[in-house]
Length: 631
Image (cartoon, rainbow, N blue to C red; front, side, top):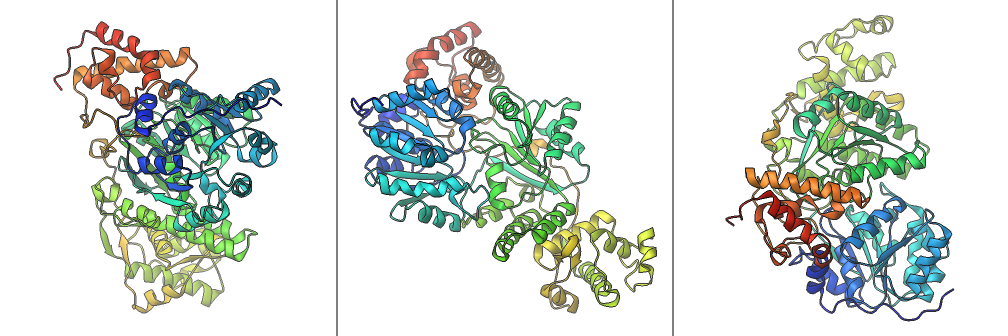
């Protein structure tokens, strides 16, 4: 092993200078400056900040301000190369150690670390805990530990990774090295678990708003399967990148095939595909414009693609935490984006049945049930979805004006009579016949729909037969969903329906049941314009208050800049956003700088990128012959 020659000296003495020189931003965003100063001074921190809020700067900058190398613990081996490539573009010396490298390259990285040549070193938790990396780090000089995706430490969470539990050893082996844990998804319980499991009880908390104001949340009943998704993409985000989430491998394959058949470039991604295919799919998504990935939840964590314009769910997510994290992958650049979902009663029944038949402990089943209840309540709310979503994470909010229930408030009617008919049918089946059925049979009875099954079970003789003929099947299924969401109905063994304590209150008339009226509507794309985040992702820049819509000249220039960026990225085998984010290209198109000095004032253009691309951009602007901006 190579002996340590010296530790990497601090690259900068001032955080704001580093922010400007390296990343090209003129000011910090939110509490970024406080976190940077706190960690750079040698103190621990727990940072809860939404996706796109600039978490990475909270450890990247302190690593430049402290002596030694910053060690970043990330669960995403497949994305480490992209993270290292992106930092190389801004002039940072970074590397990773993982199993994808040759032995020779790993030895080279170890030498670079021991010689103090690295600003940042990325490691997976399993390598740090069991792969011998501890011994390497103890021979070098570590400036800080950044634990990314820290919610993975939660044993009751949606992304639990057992190796994260071993990271508590960092406090023992490096008691004087600051540690910063970061996540975009944490309830109060998960937050407490992060502090406990990672030995961060004395750390300072930095908790930002979980609001992503540029995302429009839309949830609608599933009516037409895959064609509903096709219509949504064609209508609102044609030719743009997006992610579609499904719960099973088979459904990812089905939906990807359907989208492709309708002229929407799409690829499936799930754990059943071989590793090489998954890597290629992920690489294509990062590097190509307009590609849609149809995936299970195995895809997406740590994806740093800023221009994902939509995230769609074709199955009901299992928890609000998972839903929030997945939808948060849209619109990281602060531009308008959509979180769209279509779900049906079958989703609820299936997931309830899986919980009931699972082999987990009673405590685990209760937790998973509560998570599903919260997700269902979010789907069926008649109020602002953003208020409910933020409330789940303990944050109060006012109606947002940028979700479907705000843009087109749902009609609410007294559903007590309908609820009583449905509940009475279930009780009569149970008490008079000793029978338990799913929603389909109960609805057939209410509608007086004679089938072989209703005849064989003699259900035509029930007193509730045909009482609900005023509602069609879709409306009755909506009633079932909403009663389940309100706890006035439950799912029993084998996905059958059963009553609860609240059911009896409804049947006695002691409890009113206001139900969301099933009015099928499709919000026009123009009405869902989205609320842009106040600043580009990462930090505020020198150019503020860019117009929401570009004029014709700026729009044409923006498209030419995108073409140049695409060709430049392809030649360097990089994702386009690593060269520049759309927000930076928009600012160039609006300001139309004539000199390198003017170009350096654009957010996202630091010293390294100015040197690398400045002359090319100025030449492009000159060749376009566009007039100087009035602004």
